[in-house]
Image (cartoon, rainbow, N blue to C red; front, top):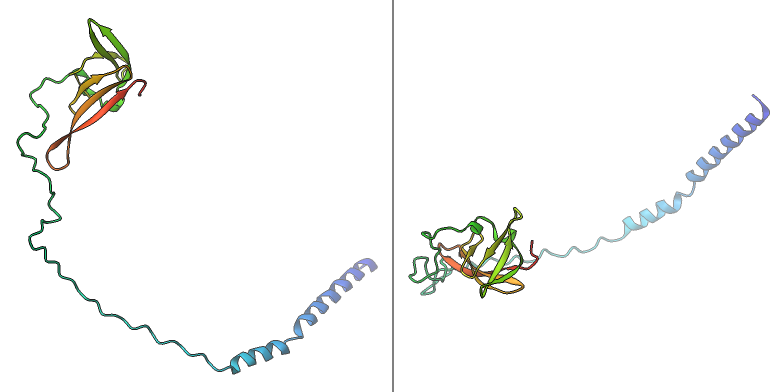
Length: 172
């Protein structure tokens, strides 16, 4: 080996020896601290909290109505709103209301028509009283900016209810 390699190896060996001897000393203070902590008296442990007994409750409804029965008139109530199943369906009732868009109005012969575009890009004229949408929606008014519709939708209790909707100018 050459002299420079021997010098490098000797320096590395000296560094390893110094590191090992530096880590081996100085343990006496740590041992003294551990002995001091072990010599301390133990602490007091708090007692467990007292467990309260469960008190049961019995519900007595008395004359109150059952919370599981709706407090609404039944579906068979006379005079309630119902769709006319015998009525002849109109073409625009084949489209969901949210797929129809108003594209304008037309005044002809003293009547105002609404112009409605369907999803197949055809434009249809509608009047007040025509039906649109799939929920028996009847047109109740036509203004220059919207067509107002009154739909008959199921109320979830076996009956039907009326719901206002509209088709605004520029809706898609």
